[in-house]
Amino acid sequence: MAKISYREALNQALVEEMTRDDRVFIMGEEVGYFGGAFKVTDGLLATFGEKRVRDTPISELSIVGAGIGAAMAGLKPVVELMTVNFGLLAMDQIVNHAAKIHYMFGGQAKVPIVIRAPQGGGHQLGAQHSQSLESYFLHCPGLRVVIPATAADAKGLLKTAIRQEDPVIFLEHESLYGMKSEVPEGEHLVPFGVANVVRPGKDVTIITYAKCLYDSMRAAEALENEGIDAEVIDLRTLNPLDLNKCVESVKKTGKAIMVYEGWRTGGAGAEVAAQLYEACFDDLDAPIERIATRDTPMPYNAKLERAALPSPSDIVKVAERLV
Image 1 (tube, helix red, strand yellow):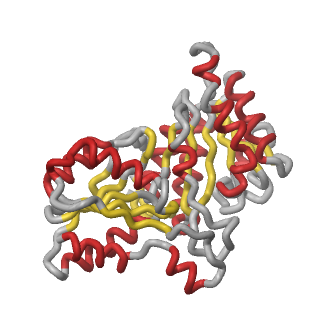
Image 2 (cartoon, one colour):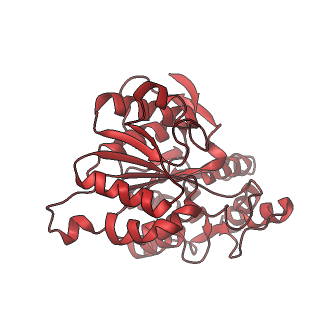
């Protein structure tokens, strides 16, 4: 298997799906001549031309709205938002149209659109450009919410997303674009709703996704030196959610820690924790713990930003207390 970056894996997925299906096209700000804000669409304009790689005006509401119309007309748009923070300007289109058209038209219309958006903190971009908003989309029925952590999953999940008939919110943490991992060659699809047990263990379950997977793995390695065997689960998709794999693990370990970068209050990890309580309350030896971003606008100061975000040391401290 080739070892490539998260960014290259996404690019490969787009090239392969655009080659396979001529209904697939890309649209967004600077996706063509500039190659995308994070260079995910680099080189695609030269390969597929302006008809299928379309630079748009700076209007997220218009970009997503046009993508929804194209999807309803039978095309397969992949809409890139420069950052999920700008996606707030398109929430009416996402929540009231993309998520509801299939339902409100009695199944007669479909919206097979993929909305890609970078998100996350850690780069000193300030409070308005450092948010993780997956819980906003998870809260809305009708949207698939995908959030890969590795290059292999980024490629496999994006290819699966493009082949969906449902609208998909595809979230990419900005810190991961340069991260490299092995990616299977040839046709590589990762199904929705299948979590990955990245590290088996017997003492405590750590459930996470996106960049926090790497924080959790570093914490698990540190805990191993103390004789604590942590199982780490990468959810990969939030809707659909693989609750069964989480329940199976928690019944084995009796202890669970949710690690996520969204705000602690009302975050996606809070929802997973609630479902775990309902599914395996009698199997728990301790309350489920949540480690997340502090409930504050993201500081610009580097030290304060690090303090606001979840860290491996936070996970280690909580795991030690539980075990």
